[in-house]
Amino acid sequence: MKSKGLLVVLSGPSGVGKGTVRQALFETDTNHDQFYYSVSATTRQPRPGEEDGKDYFFVSRDQFEGMIEDERLLEYAEYVGNYYGTPLQYVEEMTEQGKDVFLEIEVQGALQVKRRMPDGVFIFLAPPTMHELESRIVNRGTDAPEVIEKRMRQAREELQLVTQYDYVVENDNVQSAVERIQTIINAEHLKTDRFIDDIVENYLKEGDEIS
Ligand code: 5GP
Image 1 (cartoon, protein in one colour):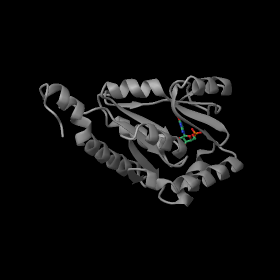
Image 2 (tube, helix red, strand yellow):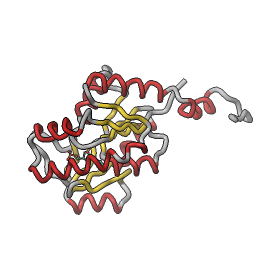
Image 3 (cartoon, protein in one colour):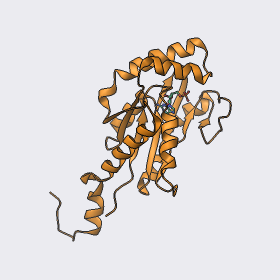
Image 4 (cartoon, protein in one colour):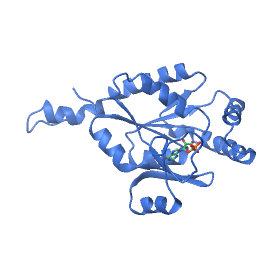
């Protein structure tokens, strides 16, 4: 039996380690043929070492607004002065092919995805403490003090929306977080709803009905 690909939304405050956890998770896909990362578009400037097309599609405000107008984004949000958004076509194509597509996005965007694609899997990655979150952002060394303050305020607002998610995974340790996410993904693939199309198409005869 074939289960449909999952849309996995990995969300949570900036600095919580979404990228690190996602990369470690992807390393468990040893054949590189099940997990796919949706690269977002953003108007933020690249950080040192970031690559266009790999970390983000770095675009101008005009280009981004063009994408909104043409309805080419699954969701978008303005976050600390910049736009961030998920290109729709990639998500649709990969999930159609049975692949699991991962979005790493902030909470407002995650809630938009939930409204549009409620059968997605919504995971909130939480920091062990707020103090730990602040240390991680400070140690990253890429943000000015006022930006750090904004990110911390934003983080508290994001935590207030945690009940909108299906799962909470604490990122106390990358390996444990990865194992918990694997458990979630394995269980989600076994949900009845994900098999219905396959059962109707390949197991039943015309006139049979699923009740
Ligand atoms: P950063 O500037 O640190 O790369 O990202 C800032 C925040 O925007 C992070 O929480 C990140 O996960 C989120 N983000 C990245 N891409 C997207 C996206 O496509 N949509 C939304 N809504 N948030 C995003």
